[in-house]
Amino acid sequence: MDLQNKVDELPFQTQMDQFELDVPKPKAGSDLDEALQALEALGYAKKDLKRIEKQLQTEALADTAAYVSAGLKLLQ
Image (cartoon, rainbow, N blue to C red; front, side, top):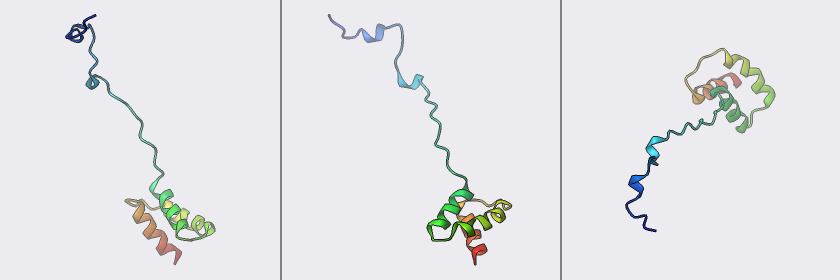
């Protein structure tokens, strides 16, 4: 069977650009959650972190680094 040059004659196309993959991005933790995890990794007690978490929740900071910085100030 000779299939050479027959692919172009198929009634459908199989090009990848016809398909759009809608792959959901992994949901990252919030900046505040990540900051609290970073502070815990630095050795701060969970009890102290729970105390400052309420204060940090009232602030709308730009990113994780800003929350870590604010958290460090509150822990002093």
